[in-house]
Image 1: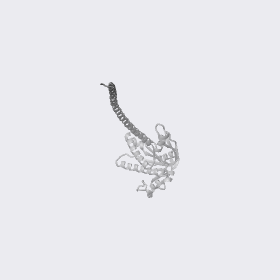
Image 2: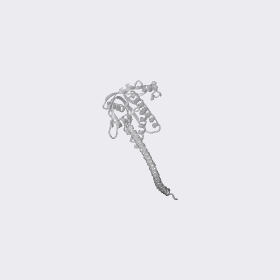
Image 3: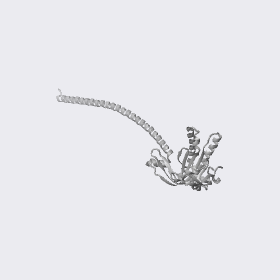
Image 4: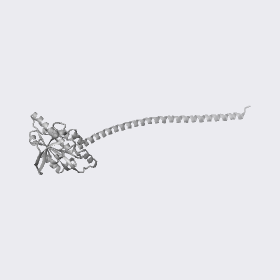
Length: 315
């Protein structure tokens, strides 16, 4: 005899099992679908990451390129700035140039004692009539370049050239107690250079120029004039008197005022010329300075100082 209840229970269990299997199949299908979507999303993310990585690399390369271009521009700017600074330093003393760059103006400055040196070529106008313009410029350039090197060694400041005249000063823009000696040593070297050049040109059968040198020491005012073309210049009676020392001098000689002679006579051999008429100044006492005294010279000609003078200048 069949147990109806038992058969009914088995059918219920079977139905339940079928439902559970169906549920699990649906769940498995959902998980498979989710896994498929996850894989697809993962693939999309990988593609996106590759694109982002590529864009980052391209951006990095572009940034490096721009940085390199900026470095080149900065280097070019620094070169141009150096050129500008060097050009300014060819016109103005370093301290004055720094003040001009810093504030845009340079205040005039009074100096109690400055040695002013002028040079001028005797017969330049007449001699230049027989020379081509290019030759005149070349010969002046050679002379003034030599003068530049000499005064730089002695710490003098070049101020300007006017035609065949050359002007420099000692004791500006930085005060130096030895400026009369420094200026005199430079003057002797300039005179020696021109004497050697004269001998050379005579031997070559060429015309030569002779040089007058004049120096005076005293107070003056220094400053910068101009706005477009700057010029560092000096003013005062000291400048005028120094100019008269040059114009009242003799070729091949260093002509100085009594004030300058008094300052350098302990170290240099000098001779009194007496009172000499000077344009717009009346009679002025003038002296020739010939050389360093033997006890202060390192060479027979008395042009270069020995250690006694060098140590004094450094003290």
